[in-house]
Length: 137
Ligand SMILES: [Zn+2]
Image 1: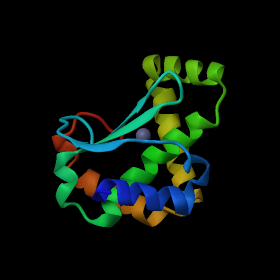
Image 2: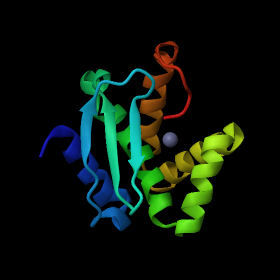
Image 3: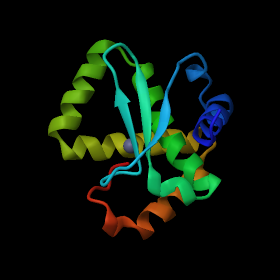
Image 4: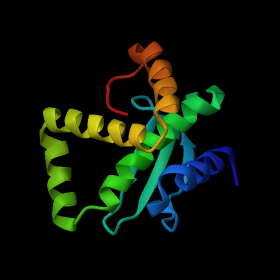
């Protein structure tokens, strides 16, 4: 188990038990516009890419970003196919919805006990904001 897998396993066990039986491949990937990116497959398949620049980040920073991605997956995992479809359309066409969706995801991270780590991630990301094109993680 590599570092990313260990962090993911711990967060799922601590805070997102509904994902315990879901396989979520996680890997380092060079990205220019995001620190974390979750891919949502058609049949509730998920994978998480983590930007290589985070290899030197602290465990809290990595955990905070990972918890945010797992919160996205938890919300999707608990939704019906129609809601998932509507959500994908709204994210595609509405910046306002996307921002609302991101903040709802942040609130879930806090509710599940990873607020401190998420704050570490936000501080890290905000310091380097100019290097990245979007404010969506
Ligand atoms: Zn997000």
